[in-house]
Length: 480
Image 1 (cartoon, rainbow, N blue to C red):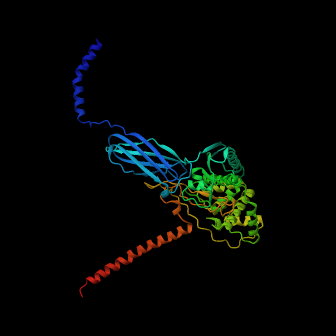
Image 2: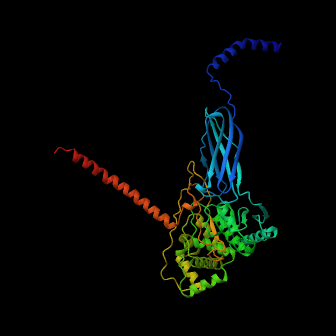
Image 3: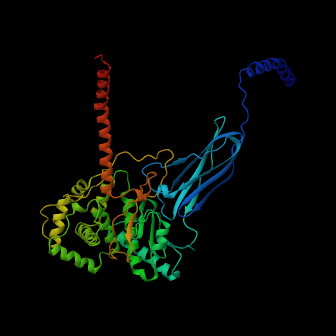
């Protein structure tokens, strides 16, 4: 009885419900089902060390209007680094897109870098689709690479046999242990070391490499590359320790605010590899006896490109760092590096941690080795001014390799113990300027001065020339 009454009530209300549905239906905007955008193919093709070509095919239920490639490199950065490229596509329901990353324009990546990419696809109705992110290893395929893993070291090699590779791996692990014990430096993750059979193979893997390069450290990428022949095993071991120090120090001090003086950076690296060769120490002792040691402030921004002076600078940098660690301990050294990471100047960081500035450090160090006090400090080499604003990647720019610290090959002009002048590669921020076009610090300074002078000349012409021009026009327009 109850069910019959309920059914009867529903029948009575049904016309009203239908009327409401009809009326409301006229107010509802119909939504058409949008077919999803599909990835038919998506790949990256490496032509090492020249290019990476990204290509993909997409299909959609409606016309695809635009395709944007978003890409980058897995490395330490000051902020989110993402570059974009805009391949030309013809609007259609089925489109193919491709874009080529030219390393000769951007500067090449360190071998072993991981490149990621994805596609942003938009159809004519404004619906957007982001493809799954993919990665590819930037490395040549002409060498039969093998890897030895363990002890926070991934050692990659292809020549010399398993014993050769194992000795270099063991030496790197031992160096890490020494750096942890003596300085307190430890890796945040395993470091990848790529051992090339010789310097020619190494230089073939990195565009714009200096002619003397024998090894390079890329701290932001956690990668080291070294060219080591079978008869240079001992040099290879010491170079591993040197470059590992650069990587660990680079990780510890990485920020958008910090600046690491060259003498401290290279002094720590020399300390990490065990100090200078006897011949280099003899050269240092002779310079000390003649009161010809360079001032510490003159070694802030860079070392000389002349071989013997560079050797003396590296040995002095080691001597100063060795004095600091032996006299004051590793904790103060780590505190100093932390203060530099946080943006303090070298003088402020030294004052905060040790109670003296650069000049005070030099006086204490000279006293400890029996060297005459430096009467007049030489002018320091130019140093960059840290900025508080992280580098932002411009749309369409190309992220490239981070700053690389290079070590010369022992058969080149520089001494075997001396890692030569730091080779500047592009920074972590995206740029389209190749390494070869960057030039020396003095060249950059000259270019900057010329740019400023040119800008001032333009302003002067506008402020002076235009009023003069209109005055002359008015003068010519007057009746005689």
